[in-house]
Amino acid sequence: MRWIWIDKFEEFKSKESAVSLKNVTLAEEHIHDHFPGFPMMPECLIIEAMAQTAGILVGEAKNFKEKVVLAKISKAVFFDFVRPGDQIRFHTKMESIAPEAASTTGKVTRGDKTIAEIDLMFSHIDQNLGGKQFPKENFVFTDMFMSLLQGFINKPAAETK
Amino acid sequence: MAMDRDQVFEKVQEVLVDALGVDEEEVSEKATLMGDLGAESIDFLDIVFRLEKAFAIKIPREELFPAEALMGNPDYVNNGKLTASGMAMLKEKMPHTDLSNFEKDPDINKIGDLFTVASIVNYVQSKV
Amino acid sequence: MGQIMKFVLIDKIISLESGSKIETVKSVSLAEEYLADHFPAFPVLPGVLLLEGMIESASWLVREKQNFANSMVLLEQAKNVKYKSFAAPGMQIRYTVTVKTIDDNVSSFIGSGVCGDEPIVEARLSLRHFNLSDTDPAMAAVDGHIVASMKKRYELLTL
Image (tube, rainbow over all chains, first blue to last red; front, side, top):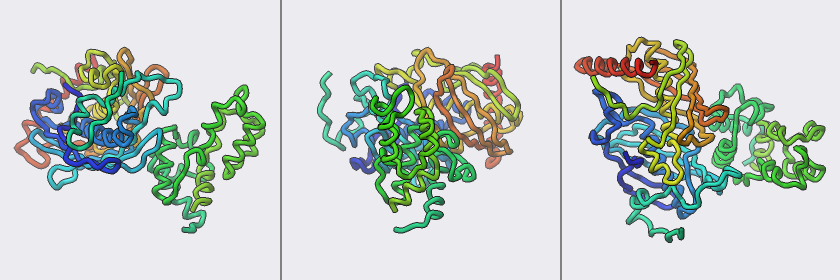
C-alpha cells in the first residue's frame, strides 16, 4: 500500500485553491476490510486525501521549504459514503498562513453532490517544536507527490543534499 | 467598524467555541484559555486566524500572545520567575490584561493563566 | 471465514464498560507498510490513522451496546482533532473513548490517545449507525454478513 490518496490535480492556483480527484477501486487492499461484503472508502482516508491536497497547496505556498504536517482537524463532517467505482473530488481553499502554521477549508464532491466538508490546520514543524530536531531534507514532499504537480507549477529548484 | 463590548464578546465567544470545541457556557469572561478551555499552541494560532477573519483585522501574534517571546530570554526570566525588566516588558506588551495579581508571584508556569477570554475581548475591541 | 485484516487500527480491547467507556491499544511497528511513505527517514503513524483508532474504539462501544443490531457504524463528524506528539515505531498508543450519548442511529464521544504519560491525540467524534436494509430490504443478507464479520473481529480483539 502506498500512502497516496489522490490520483491527480485538476486545478492548482498557487496560494489560493486546488482541486484533486481520486478514483476509488476494489483494487485497494484495505477496502475489503471496511466492511467485509460492503466495501467503502474509510472516512479517515477521505480526510487524508483532503489533507494531502491541502498540504500540497500549503507546501507550495512556501516553495516546499517547510515540512508541512497535519496538526488539527478543525471539523470533518460526512453526508454520504463512498464506494468502489466512485470518482471523488477534493476542493480546497487556503484560508490563512503564518510562519508556523496554515489553515484550509474544503469540500469533497461526487458529481454534483457534496459528500463531506473538511477544515484542517497544518503545522510547519521546523518552526514549531522547539528543541525537536528533524532530518534536514524535506521528507514530506517526496517525488510521489511532486509528480502530481507536473504541468501545474514550475519544478522548484532541487535541494542539495 | 465600532462595536460595543457585548457585540465583540459574542463574536469572540463564537470563535472560541469553534476553535476549541467547548460549549458556549464555558466561555465566560474570566475563563482562562489554557486552564479552563484546554487551548494549546496550535489552538492559539487557530484562534488568531479566526479572529482575523471574524473582525477583518490583522493580529500580529506577539501582540495577542506575547509571553512566548519573553520566555526564552534570560534578561526577562530568572529561576522560573519574571525579572523586573521581564515584568515591565510584559506590561508593555499586554496593556489589555490586568497583571496586578500575577505581579505578586510572576511564576512563568502561571503565565498561561493570564490569557483569559476577557483579555481577548479587550484586545479585539481596541482594534475594531 | 478466513479474514486477512489490513485495515484495523487497534490491536486489542483492554476494557469496555457497556455504553460508557472503552480502552484499547495500538502498537506502532515498522512492519506497517505505509510508514515507508510517511515519512521516508521519519516514520510516524499518520494522524488520520490515530483518528481511525479512536473511531474503531467508539464503534465497538456502539456495537456492543446495541448487541450488533446495526451493520453500518460510520464516522459522521470529527471535531477539534488535535495531534500533540508523533507516534513512532516501538510506541504503544492507549486510546480511551468515553460516551457522551448513544441513541439508536447516532452517538457522540470524547477520545484521547496517550503513550505512557505523553499525550498523542485527542478528538470529539460523532458516529451514525444503521442497516443497509433500512433503505433497501434486499440488502438484509449483506447486513448479516457484515455483522457476522464484526462479531468475529470483536472476539479477536477481546481475546
